[in-house]
Length: 327
View (cartoon, rainbow, N blue to C red):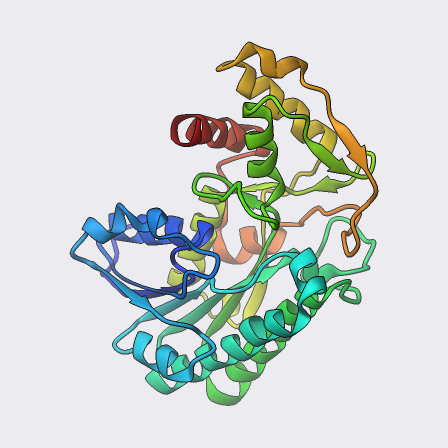
């Protein structure tokens, strides 16, 4: 990235996995960073490094409270909206709370950003929006019907953002994240993402549990690619590049069986016994799409996106981090 002016950036959900990585990155660039989080799913320990930086401010608040949103956006140039209740299974179990956070909370943030006249509102969208569309690779303009309450909420976010752009002139960019993984991703909890969960199981010499036969495939996306996309979306001066949505991915897919093989290989460097751990297979999970692969042509064309980490390269980095921090 070229030299640029320092900015004031609000990162909602900044204590979460993606949010905390964004906080650290933009602080390293000399920006002022405000984090808004209610610690429902985020963790204070993710912010240890940030809290030592004089350019960082933590606001403990909830996007469901409009006053918290108004307070957080004061004097802000850019909003990077990461706050959400993730997880398809959680949304199936509790659709009401998922909707409150992901739709009502999102709308509160849009209104606050509009009223404060922030320069741009960049938000975490989701590959789940593609729903039952079977076309591969996934192209931004072709989606199917959502397969879960979570997917509905993320699609509604896109619709609201579009209306706010057209009606109020608020610049928005949505980033459809595809299976993001990397440092700081929580391996604990009922709704832990698959990669940190598998890593923890393997490090403890437990057999990982795969839903289905392991042939479902995903476009696993390393966190540093996601950071790059957020920065590009924030700084682009290309009028054609704003008020739209981008796939945020590497543009390659791997099956869950591939994933396990790589994890065993990379973890065996630290503990050779891991190479021989067997895998358990169970039934497919409700709401899961079989295959996911992003076209990243639009991001390359309009944002000059150039992802640096394949799944394998990202996994090596992630495994090293987990081994050093969680063993």
